[in-house]
Amino acid sequence: MFMKNNENIKKLTKMAVLVALTATLTLIVRIPTPTGGNINLGDVVIFIASFLLGGLNGGIIGGVGSAIADLIGGSSNFVIATLIIKFLEGFVVGTLFYLFKNKNIIAIILSSSAGAFVMVLGYFIFEYFCFGIGTAISVLLPNIIQGVVCIILAVMLKSIIMPKDLLKN
Image 1 (cartoon, rainbow, N blue to C red):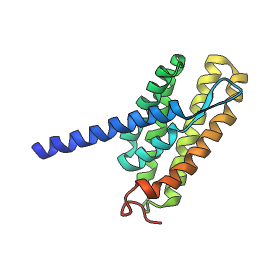
Image 2 (cartoon, rainbow, N blue to C red):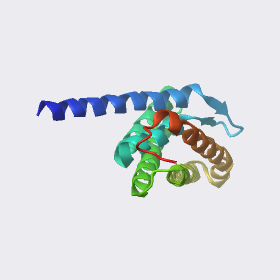
Image 3 (cartoon, rainbow, N blue to C red):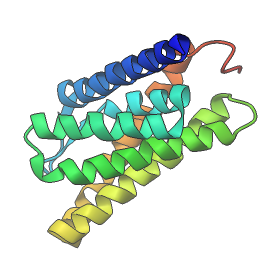
């Protein structure tokens, strides 16, 4: 009984740290775009958290961490959308990653790409319904750039962060 509680505390602690890291990278590394948004590196943490802890936990980390960043960073009108979109992003990444028999670089790239696609599509839909087609189209390129940059960084960091026995090249 004590061992199970201890494991739950460890997992919850890891998740809390990853939520904080997601929010931090989203807030600190911000490259402004002409559309008034920004490109950030929070998705790197979402991808890695999803590889390590699975879809549900990756989704929770991505949704909560990114929503906190929006709340703190002055984008409160995006908090609910971000919570949903980033949850789905992490969920898709972690779920697809665990479907691959070989947890190699191909699995990382494909699952991260699917998650980035969910993010781009999610924000496009949100922007379309809230601000119109012009705004929705204008945020496509910055969101695609963010997704690609974060995929590249996640691939580069996986060998440092992830256990060698989990991922073999």
